Image 1 (cartoon, one colour):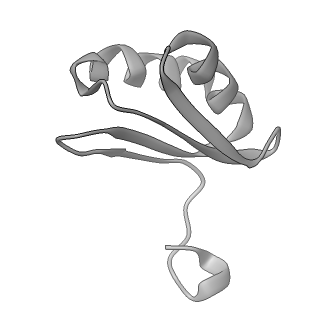
Image 2 (cartoon, rainbow, N blue to C red; image 1 turned 180 degrees about the horizontal axis):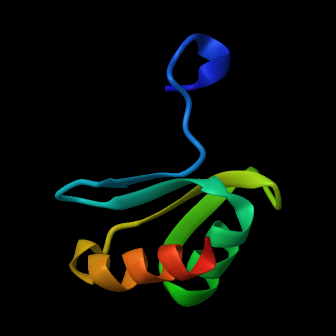
Amino acid sequence: MDANLGGPGYQNLLIRSRQEICFFGCGSVIDRLRASVHNSWWGGELPLSGYWGCKDVSDYETILGLILTAL
């Protein structure tokens, strides 16, 4: 997916699986997610960009709302 590796590229990417929710992209979104969702993990080239994830997939709508308001 990375444009540097020949893929189409992306600015922000949200992945929802049966076991976890992951976000890759804007550092300000990750900052908001990590402050709002307990028991999550994050890293990357923060504060510019990075990744964030959590195992609580039942809270997907809330997490999506946090992302949309932070963009």
